Image (cartoon, rainbow, N blue to C red; front, side):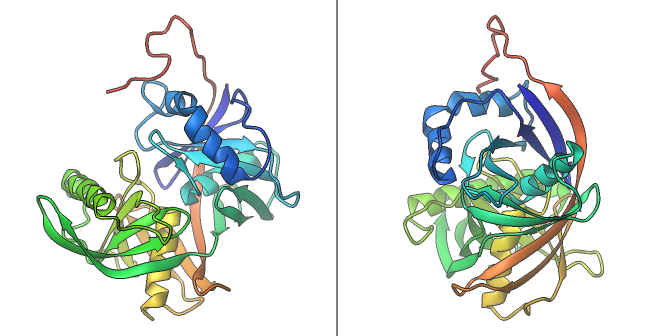
Length: 310
């Protein structure tokens, strides 16, 4: 299996070029469902240690339905197949350029959540124009075991988010363990209490928004992903959901650009335009860097061929 690894603001992406199971044809959402329900062992073996690493997201290249798209892609981490991935799209775009498949300029990429537009500015810098994002619920209070009442917003940016602002714990690297424990508890509470999307979609990510000590930086975030790892980048779909909340509150004007830092200090530039359905069309600019080209080997005699399951 030929793969190329990159990182976007510290968050790794593994693009799978070949060696994947046949997911058939049809809408990407349906092919993503097949990957999730029929090939869990495949995608987990790529993400789990010793072959993978914590926080890694896979990007499986597939044929797009929309002929105007340069590729289709299905994203996944070790615990879930994702509708969309912002940092992964930045990493994928840089990877496609590295392969000589695209050049500088604008391109369309099809995801299970819809078609997104990317603009490759240089070898490392990409702007993603995401799908329309929206806030679904505001000021929802959860009863979180061990923590008490926690209030936040539910928003969609290609994945489902519960966003707490301000963070009850300072968003600093020294607090990553505490931040992880509390956000895991919040996600479990949201699912148990039926708080999620309009059609009952469960929360898969939790965001804590905190103040940044850096002048000119709008805020710093901690983002919990479905695999219980934190996002090293500021999270593209999470930033999209956050922009929807800021717009709904009148706290950010269309076209106004802000800088969002992750808990480790990596940056995205963010802005939005109004969407046709009452949400926002987010714009996310970040940088990715190629780390490795490799051929993954699945030795039948390897006791950890399917990954380390704990």
